[in-house]
Image 1 (tube, helix red, strand yellow):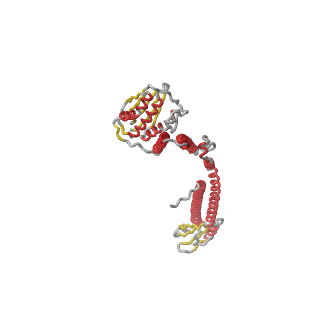
Image 2 (cartoon, rainbow, N blue to C red; image 1 turned 120 degrees about the vertical axis):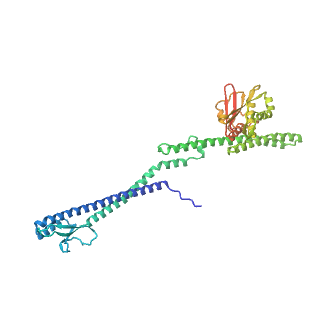
Image 3 (spheres, rainbow, N blue to C red; image 1 turned 90 degrees about the vertical axis):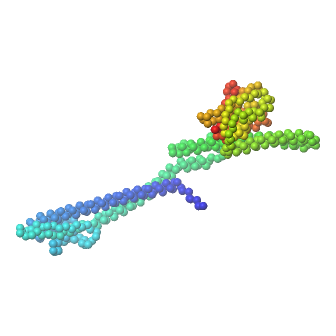
Length: 452
């Protein structure tokens, strides 16, 4: 497969302007030459017409009052000062009556006009005499003038084209200077600018209006990349932190176990403890794999669920022990029937219920709210708990991976910070989104809105 050569924009513009200039000037020169040629041809015809009338008047008026010798002299005087004219007069029987030629009769570089003149009779009873007149106009001076004009126009067209082409190349280079400046700025941007200098963007100062939308779009793209880069760095740090703690614990436990001989019972307790950490690490890895699949656009496998409330009741039964331990009650409000991925919906509801159990005030009631909005083809599923208000600054990031509003990371051994991120991913897999509200009374509602 052959690749086409990449065209140079500046050279292409310069070449196009040069060709257009040559074409335009060429057309102008052709038009000027053609107009001049028409004017010369018209002037030659007008000149022959006037000379014909003069000869006709001279012959018809002079025949009656002058002798033939005087007539010949008058004709010679008529041609004096008109070096471009030739005149030949013959009688009707071919007899040459007058001839004054300045070029051969068969010379093609002449404009000629032949006509017949009826001369009046000298005597009353004599018949009229017809003579054949040939007028020739020498075109050589005009042809030389036209050739000179053609050379002048051609030289002017070529020299003007070269001058305009040179100026066009210079102007194109100047016009593309802002583009070269942008390329220079872009080449100086690197990954470090996304991680360290968040504000480093393309400078649109002194840039033309045509490039400013492109610069704005590029800067917006850089901003999105910077946000994604920061999230990726934070994600990597969180993953390292979450996996480092159980790995350190496992290594320390194994080292302690190997320092001295231990009984089978002691080794069984150590292995059981290590197994809990391994299961936690396996849970983190499984959750990360699930989020990775969701990020790649995996969709929910929908089936018809007759009662969302019945599905929620199953999840509540699964959390019954932890709810009793926390001294909490649960009630379900509303019901709906929808096509959803029941397995994913159970997982989302379980995460929401587990989150509410951790932060609800003991003795309060957790509400599972189910509401269908047929006009918008939406199903809202949320869990409401009564506890402490979540600060507004934390709400937008509550669904980020490994994000905890509690900076002390209390309960980090049981919650690794992926539960609400998974809830948000499940909402996206259903074509929906997650939402959260928390008011001053400490009522917090976290849920998902699904497209149905």
